[in-house]
Amino acid sequence: MGKSVITAFLVLEMTEILINATLIGILIAIPLSFLSYFVVMRKMTFAGVGIAHASFGGIALGFLLGCESFIFPLVFCVVSSLFIGFLYKKGGFSEDSVIDVVFVFSMAFGIFILSLSNGYSGNVLGLLFGDILSVNKDYIVPVIGIFLLSMFFISYFFSHLNLITYNEDLARINGVRVDLLYYFFWIVLSVLIVFSIRLIGIVLVNAFLVLPTLVGLNVSKNFKGVIGVGILSSIISVAGGVILSYYVNTPTGATIVLLFFAFWILSFIFKI
Amino acid sequence: MIRAQNITLVRNNKKILEDVGFDVKKGEFVAIIGPNGAGKTTLVKIVIGLLKPTDGTIKINGVEPEEFIKKRNGVIGYLPQKAIVNWSMPLKVLDVVLIEKLSPFSFFRKYSKEDVERAEYWLEVFGIKNRVNAYIRDLSGGEQQRVSLARCMFNEPEILVLDEPNTAVDAVYNVKIYETLRKLCDNRDITVIMVTHDIGAVTMYVDKVMCLNIKLHCHSSPSAINYSEMLKRVYGNNINIVIHGEKCNNCIFGVRDDRNTH
Ligand SMILES: Nc1ncnc2c1ncn2[C@@H]1O[C@H](COP(=O)(O)OP(=O)(O)OP(=O)(O)O)[C@@H](O)[C@H]1O
Ligand SMILES: [Mg+2]
Image (cartoon, protein in one colour):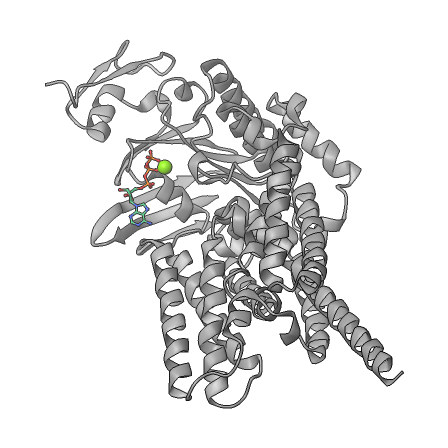
């Protein structure tokens, strides 16, 4: 009798975790699919790798200071994304190599800090490849806020961002504040990346910046279709990945990305 | 309408433009010609406020270009050099013609009937209305340029700045573009500044030719230019000009480049 109550309780708790994780994943994947369109069209996808890895330094620093809040990775990501964005803007040298430097620096910094703090007891594998159990309940309120804010930004400025992507000079002579919008874009992107790290993991986050648009481009020729298909495929990948990872007991991020990859392959078949 | 005075632009200690000055009146059709790297693109970018000159002033209707564009959306129509436009985007011809129509939350709305009709009107003017639902990356280079021209006109600009609108456009359609632009100047009082490498046919349609090679070598009506001398000055001495008559403006002339044949 007592045992079955405990089991029922555990099942209930697990369902709650699953629902929370799926909800959080979807709320982040939708705006990321929009941003993915611009990032892929401007050929800046590698920037996402740099930004995601920058969070590692922040997480490590937070651990050292005994404060595992999302503030530290957030600051690290925003600063490095603005830095990367600035370098993209400036041009004149290979941006990819600079992103590599940001990426290597924050990983090295993170490991260095962790070793100072007498061994990291946390789950490094989960950090890198996503861990559903680290997505706790108090995450949901900030994520809803972030979803609403980023969706407002994207939909309010969609035509501006579209024009900038088509040709920056045209945006300028139409009075668009290109630079301001551009830096806002990087800030929104890094906030979304930071909040998806617990679920997807540092290494795999970039899938959400690349795959939605790549799948979309295989299925549709029109930008609204591309973004729509991107959103749909990422929602299904998140939901499917979370549930599958729970039953097969695999890292959540990896499972989501594998599903997403399968979508991409499928979309190729659709294209042919 | 446009007045440039002593424009100089220095980059990496190199003069890209030196002491360039000119006037363009309202409704005038001006061509800028000159060899690659002469600073043509740089000059038109200065005219519309995308670049700041190191020295000199540029005024449109008495105010700086940045001020002038604030007058209203699309008061300047600009056709950038083809290579710097992102033609790989998943956009239809109609999407491109309407791309400068900036409005909040546009993603979730349909184009209005008036906008579609206006876009189709300008596509018709440039003879490409039949491709209105085609995707831009499926168009030929010449078709893409004509779509760009329709886009430039959509907001009914006062000034049209075209950077090599005739790249990839065939000879027959080139003439049609010049004729259309001429009509826009005459009937709608639009000021057109056009960068081109087509130094032949263009002279029949424009009011003024500006020959640029870092410095402005001449700035006058096509009939007043001594072509063989001017081209030698702008394009260098190792160029051989085949020309029918010294001061002809209505003839095609060939330019044979001897730079690599010694
Ligand atoms: N951002 C830049 N930084 C440094 N130099 C530049 C820059 N942009 C252009 N230049 C230089 O300015 C010169 C003029 O360039 P511009 O693009 O204006 O020439 P153009 O006359 O338009 O040539 P084309 O016929 O090839 O289009 C070139 O020598 C070019 O190398
Ligand atoms: Mg040029």
